[in-house]
Length: 395
Image 1: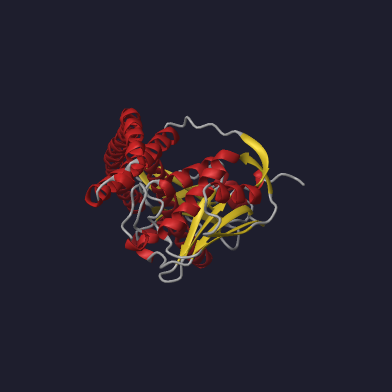
Image 2 (image 1 turned 30 degrees about the horizontal axis):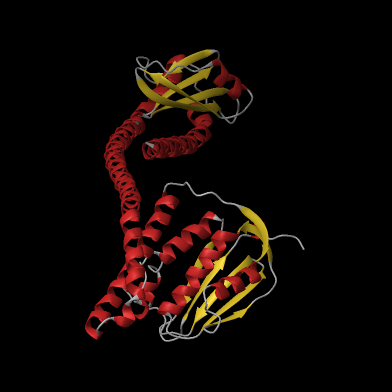
């Protein structure tokens, strides 16, 4: 309910600002009028020594709708004796010092502003009472409107929070189900797929002796079994990553040497150009090898052109850049290349499970790094593995 709390604080601030502004404006207008009336008081009260005449002079303010209190010759004269305008001792002390003062009181249950001070000749003190009932009525209406608005916002925030919580719970449940499904499928398929792989390897040894039609069907079957094995392996890796069971085993090694070994061990020497620089790192060698192999294999399978691998280190840390000169990736597909099973871009269709890049990025992030991609249609693509500066070993 953070939104309700913010709304309450905002409503309170608005009310305080409006109240202070209205009361300040009321005081400024009252002070201006009192200064004017005090300036006229000496001529109005001149030669009025009789109490009756002083009372009549004070009562003349009632014609203007203003209650007044006059202190002269030790006596108090009120323009309307039925209205109790209390002049506090503190206010009289201010007037005695020759200053204009003000006070806010309740007069007959009406919020009232009292402003006054000495006359210019210092012969008397004159105080005027101004009703602020209208201001307080407006403030009550404003407070009511703000409270109603806050309640409405709180109700809406509560409803939205419940809806959001329900949606989050549903998404979390769906994600958990997806993880369980991936784990269960990979586990259940592992044994039958292993048997299929064994049988397919036997079948592959006898391809040469088969009739042409049967050989073609057997070749397709062997290829499909190989892809199925790769899919099960990728699903197993994803299930392990999703479950958070993966452990990082760090060791020092040269990043450029690892890339060269990864290319040679997979028979890619004649297809991949390597431009290594010696970069000593301390991280998980096996995971980095898998990420690099995934990126290079992806470029060879889908890039459709020469593949070059550059290894180095810059201000952002160690990196391995895998580039190809293929047709590139269209912008509308570029943001989805790391999505699981995403193969909507015909320019990069081909063999594979559709999980390789997703697994590579998950492993890169597990190591504290990431994989970025840059591509333009017709200009090839660049996948860059970035490792954090913290894995760099001092020479």
